[in-house]
Image 1 (spheres, helix red, strand yellow):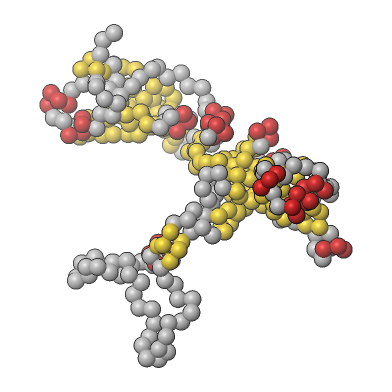
Image 2 (cartoon, chains in turn yellow, red; image 1 turned 180 degrees about the vertical axis):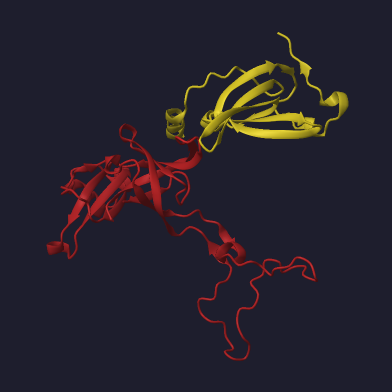
Length: 115
Length: 205
């Protein structure tokens, strides 16, 4: 197992992400390549979960786009992630917020966390 | 085929230069000791016997103890023969993962995971009976007909049926080497290799 961690470490590129957790609102700057052109797409939403550890960690980000819920999964150490901005912190009582998918009205809100 | 003996450590995934996520397997390879050099004069064919992995002396049978004593090394747990090394190898010489270079393609031989008694759909890739409705209720994964009736009045030998699956020697060919860590005896290859974590594999070049 140690050897696998060693290999992952060797391939991990240093990323300066802010500390965030499930319930926080983040803005992911994702590089998109179209032909030879490269542009950056922003995707802002609530983090539903952080999954796996090390090089294979992923985050699931949910947002409501034109009234339709959209979820995207980003590999955290993907080279296509330019940066991640922490927009707001949320007060939640669990690490995986799948209840948000079915929640409506006030239950679908995440309260702001202070301090 | 020259090659080395190793141990499958597990899988992970890495990102390549284009940002693509690639599944890969980490294998501990060698160091292997040359325990016998077979020549066509003496043995009728030329090959090199390599040994890998430490074994307790009390668990080594006497013939193997004699072999390792001749090579002036400690008792080993796994022995295998390889052919076609480029350089001349002497008894007792150690070969490390340096044999492989990044970008080369290797074959990996191992014993696949045992899957127990399995039906024909999993074991031989049969497609089952085809329909789930129209009166089918309990033979979705059945093999179908296994032969004709009164002529020949028997089932032909080798008919593919259910049975013990997995646990056999499997060779996975043309795996690209992504990285070699000589100081830690590690090899990272693209894709999966047969067997459980910790199982012995042969890496052939």
